[in-house]
Amino acid sequence: MRPRQTKPKLLQAMLDAFSLPDLRRRILITIGILVIFRFVAHVPLPGVDQSALQALFERNALMGMLDLFSGGAMRRLSVAAMGVYPYITASIIMMLLVPVIPRLQALSQEGEAGRNKINLITHWMVIPLASIQGYGQLVFLQREGVVSSVDPLAMTAMVLSMVAGTIFLVWLGELITEYGIGNGISLIIFGGIVARLPEMIGQGFLAKENFLGLSLYVIILVLTIVVIVIFTEAHRRIPVQYAKSVFRGGRMYRQSGTTHIPLRVNAAGMIPLIFAMSLVIFPGIVASYFANPAEPNFADFVMRVFNPNAPLPLGLFYWGLYFLMAVAFTFFYTMVIYQQQDLPGVLQRQGGFIPGIRPGKNTATYLNGVINRITWGGALFLATVAVMPFIARQITNVQVIQISSLGLIIMVGVVLDTMKQLEAQLVMRRYEGFIR
Image 1 (cartoon, rainbow, N blue to C red):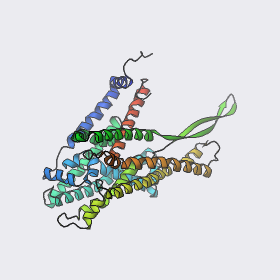
Image 2 (cartoon, rainbow, N blue to C red):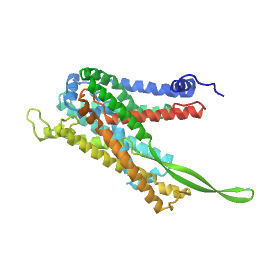
Image 3 (cartoon, rainbow, N blue to C red):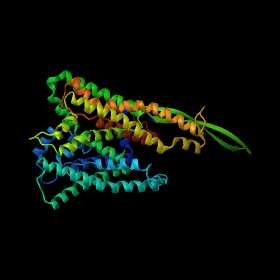
Image 4 (cartoon, rainbow, N blue to C red):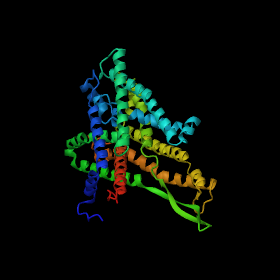
């Protein structure tokens, strides 16, 4: 019997985790790889005018989306400037193609071997996506005077460096997944967001003359995090019964077991916000290639409209469109997920049924109705969190702190997932975990 613990539960769980050699090794590997990632994020590309780059970020808020997934590496234009965003894009594309292309759908049903092949295709898809994105960024930055004009050979070397940086970060993320704790790609994004927190705190001190507004901003931030935790963990339990036959003493007995299907309220996670944000800022990014500050044209108007920092009433159009797209993509992506899972078919093959619902078509109709109802909660939650930075700025009048709703969801999700994995490791070894 373990002695009674006198230390706080969280502190005791951390000490227990470091007292186990294999778990301590996993934690140290994760921390070490994140440190390597931060070093790589500070390796700059040659021929970059840092002062011009900072000035570009100050006048172009759309660059913040690209900087989010790179953990500040885009702000320095390092070899890791694209972060793992091309890999995320490739993963989303593959996830949408699997139910559409019969060959990919067949691979997804071949178990571990099929998933490995799909993962390999995703990795190969990263290279052209990263090349196109890297070249587009460099051409845009050359036009803005951030990168000096170079010959095609030097441009090729810079693009290859950025592609190599992305592939290296993806490899580091997979090392964390295999040898460390948590999802590696998510932790890479998380590490980049957390690395910017000291800068955000410093910006907060700049708003000390607006003490009341800053206090309200912090309260709204804390309440938003609480709501994210609640909706991330919320789920609807659907009772399921399984009938099984047991041969005992020369006779056959039928027994029934009861369990449940946990349908998550926010089954789509952060993916709908990535879709919505990408589409909302896309017109502004395209318009930035044709804008001319000396002679304002239609492209300059598009940039003002599709700008997250646009003043009222233009800001209402941008954030209203963002809200509606977040709701729409939440429903779309949730339906894609549940269609791939084929819950009615799985229940029927395993001999399970929902009490009071006939198997087959009636079960599918019932589950679709439940999923549609709870998805409204998840969709409105994601959409509200998406526009929360705009609402917070309007209420508090704090403009110097820029906190992304997508970044908050990523941070909360990664922390919860990592704590659950540590919890499982500790409980498996009969230690008391963080949560229980």
